Length: 405
Image 1 (cartoon, rainbow, N blue to C red):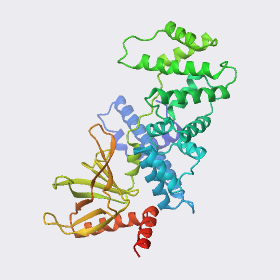
Image 2: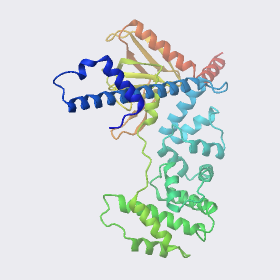
Image 3: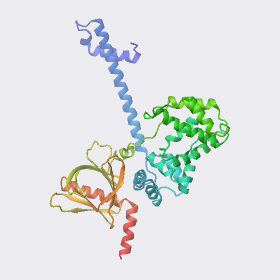
Image 4: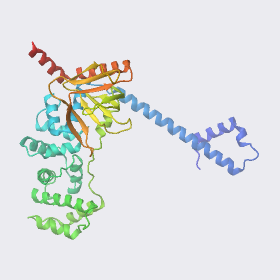
């Protein structure tokens, strides 16, 4: 074992301070060597721990220095976060919310850039939006694809980048439109690789089919190289380089496409630094039984879980068009409820049996019971603060006041 000068100095110092450990009569030379190695190993570990602590301190300092710009106030950031959650649950309604609240500009370029940045967005939802056969959505798709730079990349490399930026829908017509845009963009970035965009389209589609065939365990008859070459050549009007097709086949056989999987990471980020969290008893809607749930208040929503360790909530209560009040209940103490300020039911969300988020509107009120009076008052205050921080709610309530006069 090699010992540098610093380690040797430390070890010499240790020996002087602890001579009894090395002068023990029962210690063999091998024992002393083992003891020396243990000491040096411990020293190295302590130094590495110290370095990690220093790095963590630097990162923490950098995080603390990240300020919020004057025109990007905390309430607006919460609105953006809420808008992203709405988009992830329902792309159409979510985008309407983002545009109505001036969080995303209502232009194809701005929406495409919003998707391309992708932070906090569900990639399946992006794919659903881009795949819609609506003129505006198709323009957004074109702008989105144009943001990708495929220069000097092989067709497989370009497809790997492209298919990682969103989740490809299952419908054939949607895939057709997306791959058509991809093919045009690839040919723009790499002139001369294909004679036209149609040839690129044929190969791209064939590669996607090949990826499914080779790596789907349910497919028993795996496509051979000869079948792949024949299929591409027969489908294309123009000649395609066989060497390129062989490279495509080899690349896909060696490594399948990485398909984006949305696993609730957006939720996990939401729950890292909540405004308030704790146990509450929640009354059921149809059956008025009480169940203990773990509640988290953040980003203009009230989330509730069955257990604190659950990664995804059982339900989500958006704090829109609602208010909160203290109530008396014969069966429970320290009760309060969130109630609709309109004639409509509260548009909350739940997870169905398959884990998908679905919108439900069965509740005119959500009634909860706290552990004591102080806890109840704190929940009411924090929920009220969240409601008042939502500018959309303020605008709506002010409009109602004007109309009622």
